[in-house]
Amino acid sequence: MKLAQQVISAELTQFESRFRDAVKSRVALLDRIMEYIVKRKGKQMRPMFVLLSAKLGGEINDSSYRAASLVELIHTASLVHDDVIDDSNMRRGFFSINALWKNKIAVMVGDYLLMKALLLALNNREYVVLDALAEAVKVMAEGELLQFEKSRKLNLREDIYYDIIKGKTASLLSSSCEAGASTTFTDPEKVQKLKVFGEKVGMAFQIKDDLFDYGSQDIGKPTGNDIKEKKLTLPLIYTLNNCSADLKKQLIYIIKNQNTQKDKVKFVIDAVVASGGIRYAEQKMESYRDEALTILHEFPESQVRNALEELVRYTTDRKY
Ligand code: FPP
Ligand code: MG
Image 1: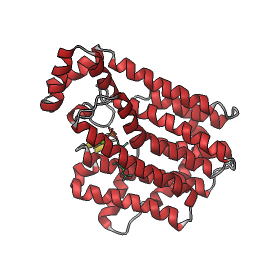
Image 2: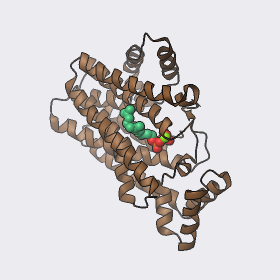
Image 3: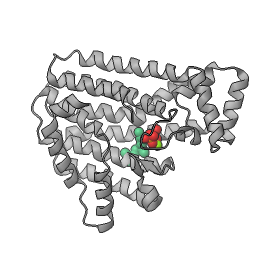
């Protein structure tokens, strides 16, 4: 991520200060929570995609910064809500908002962040940027609901898995690149290209995230959580569709009835590894990455393009 950070280093500092301002609140409790959120910032990959997509088309301007803040506000809101939905107590290596302040507060904090995003766009008449991002929020909620519906029925279909991750993750990355590009490019075709680029990156990003759940590295949030939540992701979907009938029965029984027992969850993880489910998901992730890079290479070579390429490669090679 070094080159990306270098190419937009001044802009990232500027973004951080604007983001801090964007989440200020006069309500003491909210302000405390906002401070907690700002301090435990994530990798800031989405704002980086916004700013680099913008810089690919020209000088980063006020609208580009607002697009970056908007995206980070929406992303943070979605994670605060997601940890309530997934009943997860860790995020970015620290306690989640619901773990520290309980679900009721976390739900309101997510709503607050979302409304801050909406107001930031409206108060500055950022209608083009808002248009790109409002669609993403809707699609994200649809993706989460589809995931919920399918987890109850133990979805085994790969195409439905792709629909889910396209909604919950790829839509925001796609809109991030689109929104950033819309602040500098004049050619709508180029903006469209970056939108598709972002979608491919987003697909690769979520497959990587789902692969982490099968690992044992410290990634700042719990692993094995997907099985606990009956979330069938690509490594497991592949395994269930390609293993013996006996093993399939056994695995489904565990996912349905013993998903909170550590040794049983480990049995599932070991079976996924042994059946090649991890390697299969990695290949799919790499193929989305390559699709993204092919689109990116339609733009002339430059330092900004190289930085975007590096960020794409980071998405699939990252350790957390
Ligand atoms: C993380 O997935 C969650 C998302 C990528 C999207 C969450 C979307 C919503 C809650 C709906 C939209 C809501 C708002 C406020 C915009 P995960 O649970 O697979 O990953 P994790 O391991 O990081 O929790
Ligand atoms: Mg989650």
